[in-house]
Length: 81
Image (tube, rainbow, N blue to C red; front, side):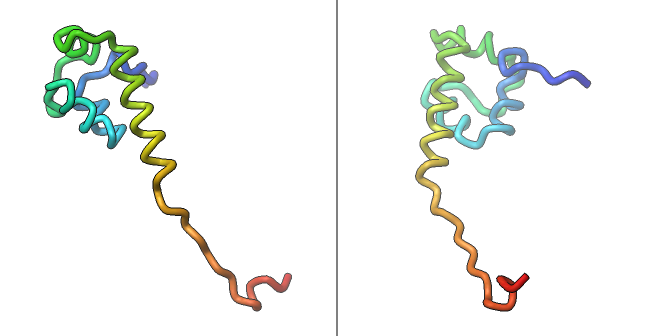
């Protein structure tokens, strides 16, 4: 199966792949459970699909930067080769 770009996917497929998409879709009054193609839903919200996806990407990147760092500590025995 060949991967499709986001514009060819439905709203609920995009919302399932990108967690932050639900918040952005809600801001544009688009239901995340909608089975409508992204380009049509974006047009109904008076935005371009590129603009909608840019906001989704921005929110996802911003959240990733704010996520707490994961730190692992090794014991002395684990450090000896």
